[in-house]
Image (tube, rainbow, N blue to C red; front, side):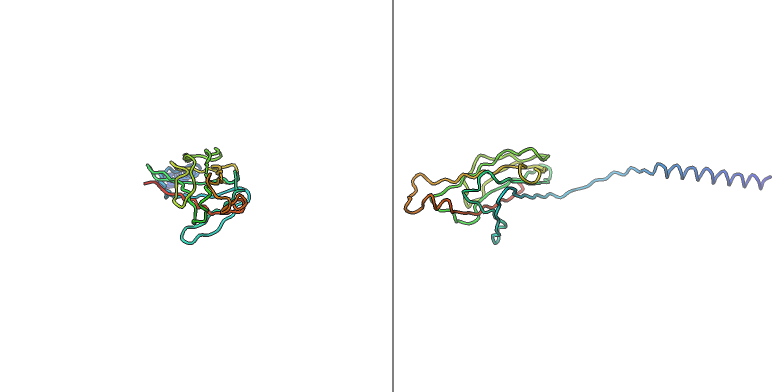
Length: 189
């Protein structure tokens, strides 16, 4: 009888243990707290029709624009920032190849709304120069989308100064002019 009780006890123990293990396998869940840190990063790109680029030593890639580059360029970006910081996008001429008689006004539109997050705020229109100037500020963690009709539309206005000398520089010269523009995204400190 003792022998039978021992076997029955062992059988009962095995049965209960197996049921417990099977019940755990069916649930098969565990809760573990996870923290993940993503390092700050930023990327910008241009989209549009008939874009031209070249490489400038020690400066990066420049966009080549001409008087026909009007309302065809979209500035797209993605940004991950740390707490209490933001990014700013700057624009500048890459080389002093703009004749003194000509100015280029750059107007940046508001974000087209195709992305998400804290997209930046365009500044007032600027006149491009060799000095980098902010064109979009207060960029948080965001993504504007990629391609045409996403991000910010860039509009360039080429202007001859009122007192230009047509014997030195003509409107025909303006039509054939090309310059390089460099866009840089920088973290505000």
